[in-house]
Image (cartoon, rainbow, N blue to C red):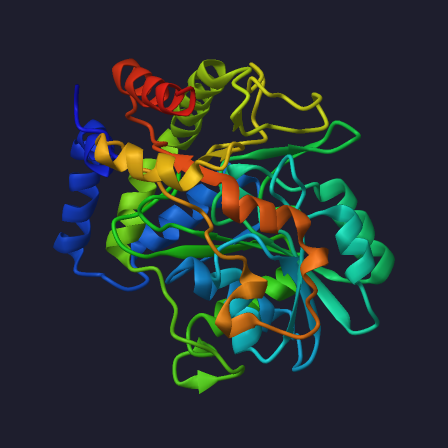
Length: 388
């Protein structure tokens, strides 16, 4: 059996080596390393794939979130609601811009923003909602957009983990994750479903004026060289990374399908085990899909995350590592408990789901190169340990 990787980037590269190498060589031959043709070509390709009017590439996913908030003109003290159970970048940029983060709990089934908690968190100072499409599953955008419209709030989609996922509205319409709110953001960190070989990110919007503002912000506030019309930053996707992404984008749907197939294998193997709660897909096309239904496109499984219910999560984590099975705990500490983001406004009773998840979640290897032998070994190792 091949060594098991948490993310097998080398195996994936071997499948597309010729195309990727050719793209990188073209950039080297042209020496247009910043804002070169590959950046513009990738931007157009991604706009077409997402069916969105504007893609603005930038240096990384964290920058993408910050620039999106800058582009919306949010002001110091404005409240921005987001989830307690996510990576720190989501709240980090809110704090950096001197906005006021408002952390709320997540839904127990999907790990995405809890709609009832969202309704309760809105105040006259609330200006924006940042739903995080965690682990690859799209949040309840029907409800979020309705709430945003009712209260005149911006919606900034944190789509760092769910590029390629579809959202089906109650009326049957579909849109790609990240293109539904006022603005969406993503990361091209190497381990993402669409990842480059360094850092990269992008911002999406259908708003022409907002896109114009953001295009200036990413480039020092310039629309014409040395004329600075807005306060900006230096955040550009370099041409080599754009070349890699352009080579990988045509494979994104296949990558997502491969991850869903691995998730189906895991779910089937763990079905009915009393010590395990498997991840679920949930959309308006179907009810909750514990077995990841055949038409599943609402979840792209950036991570495959179990909940271990018998109190042995940490022991399992260690046991898997001892048996050559990489795994991770996303996330071991809630944001409201982090030293950087503690606030007297937060009460422990407001975060029952998050406080439970940090004790029970464990993420297993999830990537496009997993084979049946590896999946069998992983699942049997887990089941044998938990059933002891």
